[in-house]
Image (cartoon, rainbow over all chains, first blue to last red):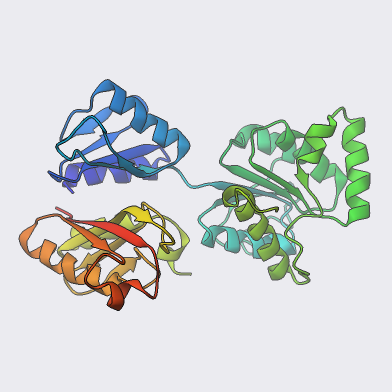
Length: 238
Length: 109
């Protein structure tokens, strides 16, 4: 890999800009493809360039083969997308376990809590903290299809605005901590707020896979397991 | 916590080793068949001191890849390696993992 390509790739990753490194496995030449620009060692036909950009959007690395080409044309597309995000609402005890478990899983974690005593650097070393009210925080952070949102406060004043914002976003996972009874009451409140049945049914609650989790770390594993299942488990119930 | 476990940052590790003056090779899984243990795009960086970061399988073929990576660091030539049941090393490195995997090894300039 040429240093110039490497440096451009590292800069894109540092700035959370989606990119694909395309390698011609026959020659070793490489080209870096972005949504609007291309840099590098060889040119790509417009249809191939479109396909590479489609792969970026699908987050799908892999070989790109041209069946028309009998010379054994072989391109490898390596998609480098920004990390998946997890927005945790509530800087509570379970969040202290969930944040590192999610980080280990490769997620870019933000803990949202307007209560200054909870969302402190001492309780969440190295974790991004957001002290806005949850609906304002979500308006700022804009959950997308690569974002999971989990509410943990048990306080409807904080959880409900976050859930309403999350359910109206394309977030791929929305989970809420609370017992079955708490969750039923929550759904009634959200319906009263005008959310549809389809919207409220998107909430995973009680949150997490049913593995009998008791401690904060176990609950964190149950939640991260469920997020992983929703993301990866195409055929499994989560 | 181990940073190389936490995210997809093997390219960063390779660049850091290179900047420190070491010779570095980067191995990337480019295709898989069957039940290969790591997905396409998984990477491992190797330097000329034998340091390794990341992985291209569940530990099945890393030492074989590191061996080939040393050759790439030496001659600068990329290599496309195939591992699996059709490979002569199958009984040695393939059976424990199952599946087949192709790994592209390149030098970091």
